[in-house]
View 1: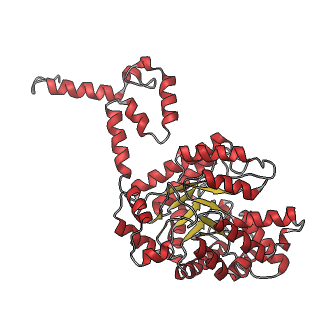
View 2: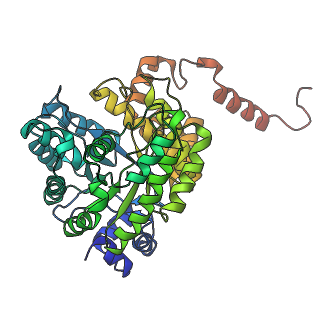
View 3: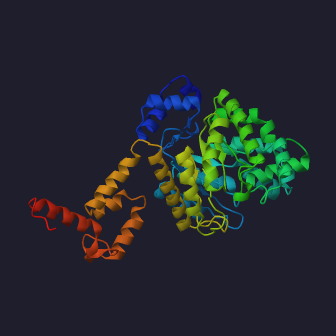
Length: 439
């Protein structure tokens, strides 16, 4: 039986117990949520994760970090270093998006070093093999080869895979009816779109969805139903093509659940802040409460070099409105392959957004961390403040740069510290007999 099959029968496995403990949640509540499809636990049956994760309704918002090679930078070592940086910073899951070098060997090395759920996008490998090994165009990619690659990823221990199966011929009609400013910005979505237009056929991932379900069930692959038509700029957000794809993904979600396969729904993208809550509501309604995985969303298009901030703004709004899973965005987004520092900053920014949203969602234990920080600040307890920080390393560095000779205060206020002044005033008030206060 699959994880979902067991959960539907109310079976509380060791995996459920472990994840429930991590979330400060009753296992009975978690098993019901997994059975209903509102929570997923991506965990390939061929591996044992030392840090499994539950993702979905009623639990802490999770953050994914993307790593992976490119044709210009095909080396494995930098990606393993990024993996470590992302995990040390607190990423809950990792996706390997490699398109350069020996992709299979790179994926296996990342899998071996990754204690958390690992995701991939199989069509990347299928496309690279078609172009570089078979010397054909992406349009000539064989459908059976694409399914073979999906199965390879399942056999090799990948926990969740992005499948762009909602981009259909009908969705393409919506693209023609209303021309977008940026068209299709999803790499996997663009591969499928080019294949469909060249071959004049339906999306093979849509047509062969039952075959994909059989593969997913065999290897316990969680399907992350990809947003091939996500908006790549604010002007393209919430159009007919995007919404049509979401409707299709909702229909496929039910089919996956009937097959005992866990499902995540992927979402935008670039989107103005006022549209974000409505998009979360749409996904939850159209996709029957399945966990929602968003890239950002980026709340403005004009901040290259700072898109980890635009993403954190949108991510906080999205998660507070009910999104369950944030894909980090680094400062290098739209500009280059991220560096180690970019990876760390991207993870930290998304973790801040996730935590801010968890307070709104009243996730067990979320507000407690902020209460503890407030008490530490009130007592000018710098050691505890640093320990409670999302990024203790940076907090400690800034404190040291300020100079410990400043005593209990910081260099911003020094002796004019509001907290010290308040405490002094309250002590004076307690020690002054009533009626003798100065007028």
